[in-house]
Image (cartoon, rainbow, N blue to C red; front, side):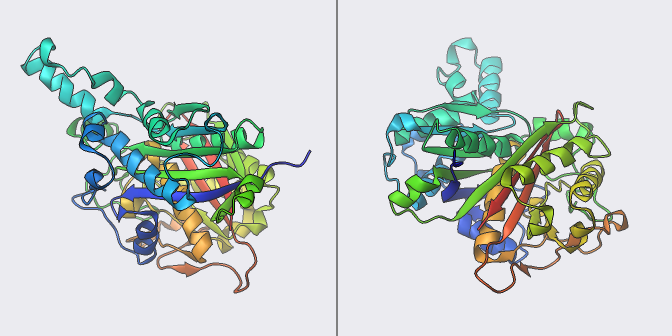
Length: 400
C-alpha cells in the first residue's frame, strides 16, 4: 500500500521575536535575539487582536499563545472557521511541559489570601494542559482525536510525530499540531536555577565556550498537517513535507541526558529511516542546543553517531539564544524554524555565538545566515531534534 504523504499547509508562531512565523524566520536569519534580562518573554503579544474578551477570560496565557499561533496557521492553510474535511476526520494534538501555570499560581494566591470561596470556578479548565487542543477544537470544529502531549522539552516534536502517524495510518485527513508554554514565573525560575539547568548569568549561548545553562522563554508554534493527496485535491499550497519521525527514551536519569547520546542517536536514525532518507542528504540541522554543557555534548555525540564525517559539512544552529528555551513548545517552534529555513533556502545562525566550545569542533556552527541548497530547485532536507527531561528524545525530518 502506498504510504500517505504528510504535508504542512499552514504554520503559526508566537515567540520573543514577535507574533508570526514570518517574523520568527526573518529576525532569526538576521541574527536578532528577543532575549531581554535573561529570558525570552513575548512582550509584544496582543491576544485581544485575535481572541474576544470572553475567550481570554477563560484561557490561561499558555492557551492564549496556542490559540493565536493556531489561528495564524489555520488562516495560512485556508481553513476559515471550519475544516475543509469532515470534523471527525481532523485531529488536534498540542505538546506542553507545564500547562496553565499562570492560572494555577494566581488562584493559589487567591486561595491563600482571600479564601476558598473566591477561587475562580474556571481554575481547572484554565490550568489543565489539554485546554489548548480542546479550545482549538471548539473554535475550529475539530471533532477527531484531540489531546495534549506532556513529555517535557520533546512535547512539541512528539505532538507533531503523533499527528504524522494519525494521517499515515488513515485515521485522519488532517491534524493541527504544535506546542505552547508560558512558564516564566519566579517559582519555576528558582526551581530550574537550583537544579543547575538555568543560566545564572542570563547570557548563555548554545555551543559557546562559556555557556552556563539555558535561558527560559515562552511561546507557541502550531502547524497544520494534511494528507498530501487531499491537500492537492483542494488546491492547498504545500509549505513542506514531514517525511520522517523517530523517538526513543534514554532510561538513564530524570533530568540529565545520557552522556553518550546512544538513545538520542537512535531517535535520529529512526527519523531518517522513516523518511527513507540517507544521512548524507541532510541539508540543515536545527539542533535542540539548550546551552547546557551536558545537552550540547550529548547531542553532538548523537549526531556524530548517525552522520559520521558528514556532520562536519552540515550547517547547524539553535534558535534558543534568539527566543529562549520554550520547554514543551520548543520542538514545535523549532520545526517551524526548520521549515522556514528550507522553504526560503536560508538557515538562521545561533544568535550571539562568537566562540564555540572547542569540544564541539566537529559541528559546522552557523554564526551568520547560510544559504541552503545548490542553487537549483531541487529539494532540501532538514533535521530538527528535541530532548526532554525524563530522557525523551524525538527527531523530525522535513523536506521542501
